[in-house]
Length: 131
Ligand SMILES: [Zn+2]
Ligand SMILES: [Zn+2]
Image 1 (cartoon, rainbow, N blue to C red):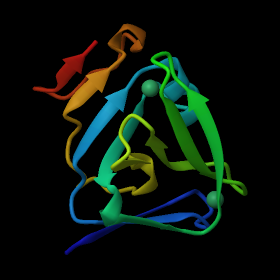
Image 2 (image 1 turned 180 degrees about the horizontal axis):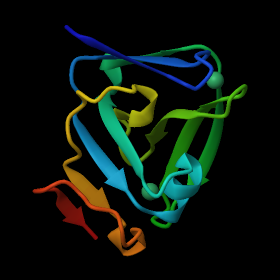
Image 3 (image 1 turned 90 degrees about the vertical axis):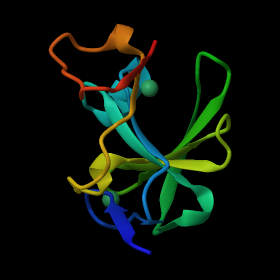
């Protein structure tokens, strides 16, 4: 099975993911903008058993509007958030797609929090819009 390897900026924190992600999505919410430093965040979700990490991750827990918590794992040296888990989706791990620097990742299939989307952002054809 193929592997995809993602890293933080300095390379200390790595993720190794087997096969293809369950899905790739985009979130325009303010928390994702602040975390990623970009106009939106894009993440690929893998089943937990097809995911492993190496290196030292710092953790930060954020409780969202709906009351669920997400635990973000980032590198304490360079600060990149590489992956996170959400207690509403206990079987999946989300990896920030920038960690892979891989243009062969699947196109995002849904987009959320579009009410906070920057007006100049253009999304892929056929993407599902979820609020
Ligand atoms: Zn790093
Ligand atoms: Zn978000």
